[in-house]
Each structure stands twice: as C-alpha cells, then as structure tokens.
Image 1 (cartoon, rainbow, N blue to C red):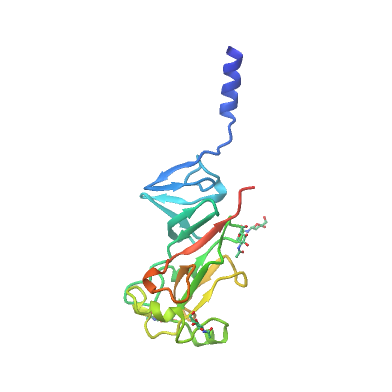
Image 2: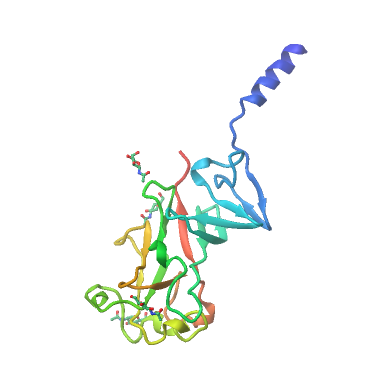
Length: 203
Ligand SMILES: *[C@@H]1O[C@H](CO)[C@@H](O)[C@H](O)[C@H]1NC(C)=O
Ligand SMILES: *[C@@H]1O[C@H](CO)[C@@H](O)[C@H](O)[C@H]1NC(C)=O
Ligand SMILES: *[C@@H]1O[C@H](CO)[C@@H](O)[C@H](O)[C@H]1NC(C)=O
Ligand SMILES: *[C@@H]1O[C@H](CO)[C@@H](O)[C@H](O)[C@H]1NC(C)=O
C-alpha cells in the first residue's frame, strides 16, 4: 500500500507541466498557448492583462487577441489603432508589428495589408496603389478618415514577403490596417479586421 502511494506521488511530482491555462476573461487559452510559467508551453507565451488576452511583439507592443483557432493553430490579433485625427498607427514609433525571427509565431498568408500616408517611392513597388485599391474604401470609414487623400496601397501578405513584420515608419508609410481573408466585392462592413498569426506545432 505504502509502495503504491509512493509510486503515485513520484509520478505526480514528475508529471510534465502540460496543463492548459485557465480562461482569460471569457476566452479559452488552448494548449500550447501559455499565459504564465505554470501552464501551457513557455515557447507560446501570450499575456492575460486585466481580463484581456494580448500578444507581445518583439518591440514590446501589446496587440489584443480577438480570436483563437487551435485546430488550425491560428490566432487573430487586432491591428493597432490609427491615432484619431492623424494618419499614424499607434505602433509607428516602434516601426509597426515585428515578431522575433525565432518566434513560434509567424504572420499567415491570409492577411491583406493596407498602408497609408506613404512616400512616393512606394510606387516603385509591386503593391496595388491604384484608385481602386481596398485602401481607398478604408479612408471613408471612421478610423481611416485621418488618412484621407494620402498615398495608400494594399497587398496580400503572402509567401513572397517576410512573415515576421509589417513595417511602418516616418517618411515611408505611417499607418496600416489588415483584413483577414478579404474577398473582392465584400462590402466594407463585412471586413474582418485583424492580423492572422500562425504558430508552429510544439516539438
Ligand atoms: C535565433 O536562434 C539562433 C539559433 O538558435 C540564435 O543564434 C539567434 O541568436 C536567435 N536570434 C534571436 C533574435 O533570438
Ligand atoms: C487593385 O485592387 C483592386 C481591388 O482588389 C482591383 O480591382 C484592381 O484590379 C487592382 N489593380 C491592380 C493594378 O492590380
Ligand atoms: C504623414 O507622414 C508624415 C511623415 O512621413 C508625417 O509628418 C505626417 O504627419 C503624416 N500625416 C498624417 C495625416 O498623419
Ligand atoms: C508559418 O509557419 C507555418 C507553420 O510552421 C508554416 O507552415 C508557414 O509556411 C509559415 N508561414 C510563412 C508565411 O512563412
């Protein structure tokens, strides 16, 4: 009897820390995502701040997590606010979104990124800066209205691009937003604003 108890205790104390993290606010935190050292896998760290799940960029900016789909290993974060009455993203001083090259997360290929208030040399790039670009519609809505009339462009962030950053800077483009799985012809009120990230399967 004593032997059995000792074996059980030994097993329990050596159990790997594979616990699923508790809910954050009303959102589940599926494994391997980790909100603390005591649960999940530390390579998949996210943050539960005041009941809201957040993703921390390499530059130290927190992006709100809007949804998580563990079966396809994806989560969607909120694009940063465009500061009211300006055409500047709130992460502009940090150069936009960047993930560590070694991060367990990358930016998926389902994001259509729109850049605003760009300098003229963006026209040398293959981005779509035409008068029919999706970005022209965004300028008509509340948050984009500070960017009205600026040079703007959009592009699908696919495999031809770095999957670890969305860059903005003074003298380049100063604001951005992103829509997941945009379809031509979708009315703007059906756009699914967000930046979809993907995570690598745990080893
Ligand atoms: C990424 O990983 C490589 C190899 O493990 C290491 O040499 C490099 O310093 C890491 N880079 C960062 C930014 O952590
Ligand atoms: C730019 O994007 C719009 C909206 O998707 C599309 O209708 C148009 O053909 C694109 N223009 C170019 C030059 O690719
Ligand atoms: C556009 O970008 C320039 C710097 O490149 C900045 O000085 C200007 O304030 C920006 N415009 C708006 C409306 O924010
Ligand atoms: C991101 O990581 C996933 C999972 O390893 C990989 O399949 C995908 O190709 C990567 N995406 C990009 C755009 O590099």
